[in-house]
Length: 272
Image (cartoon, rainbow, N blue to C red; front, side):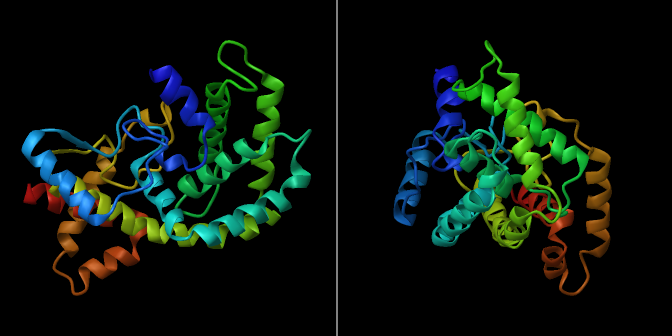
């Protein structure tokens, strides 16, 4: 079941990859507010001790990456306009029509979801991204696989990604302003998701490192060591400035530091 659905279909059916994840389904496209409340009433009655998990060792992408992707559903027209523009401007970069449209669309969604909050594509991000691309291509099992790796095909796809991410490329010039909009709206989605995880029926679970923004990719990327000393220091700094005027607004203004999510996680822990 896992190999057929999670490790094949969820890498090949790329209509909206936010729903291509463990515990989710590509067929899901949201429910009404009334349906949600009814589902929570049923959950409270029948499964009050269920796990409320938004990231685990097995999820395909970090919880905040999915929160960014979900913004697309509110900007659908603009999103498709941008995607068509990217298909057009990146057409000349392709070699032998590689990657195909399905895989190229997957790449654009991945970039919107995981692009560094710093706005800079450093060596670390690029290395992680290219490793993910290789795993993605092998999991699809269409042009490469773990059993029969096609190194030439994989390198062509990775070269495409590297070329479009070059500073000053036509793609980057088109991509950055739109991605920044997705990023900012994604912050609100992330915080709303966090609040629901802690306040809906069930037991909230915070996966390692997710006290701060988590734009990880699938394992082994989401198994990287967590800098807990950094988080401890941030908690101490939050304690020192929490009495300041406009404290929460300052956290929002400084959202790239992730102190906003860390602070809200701590407050929700205290509430529980």
